[in-house]
Image 1 (cartoon, rainbow, N blue to C red):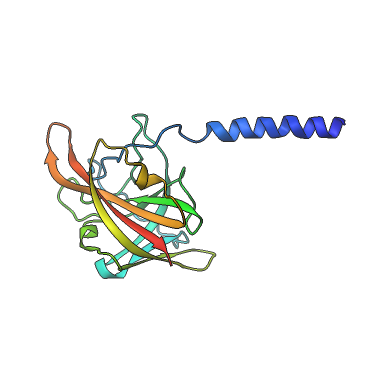
Image 2: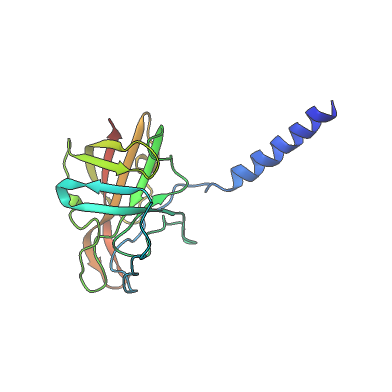
Length: 191
């Protein structure tokens, strides 16, 4: 009886702790362009992280974990070369929706990792090369453009299957807000 009660209390504590680590609402589509800081130097040690590979547009980028900003936006990577995996979404290769954000460009017009993301079309292939696991292959199903202030549920949650959505900036540059006014989302499904 004591063991059962202790396990029940531990389960409730774990559930409450686990529940509070996830955001209550879906994030807005973040501003992911025109980095004010110069790009960070790549580490000299060998890179053993997972990589996003899109041969058709010349992408081979390290995947890092990102969360939310205090304003409720999905965080963006700290440089224009990496892509950020939304840590509150599904894990890569699992049912649900994983989301990767990448920069369109840098503060001085340098091409970011997703500079050519708009060239992808339905049927194109995206790969995730994983450090200690079998690579994953996704197929592009569609692309959509949203206002930067939108919170489109279909970007962060899917009805079924294992999905990966890629986000970058598009549209017009708003000098007053220091961001582009739209976001391009490429939707993909695990094959």
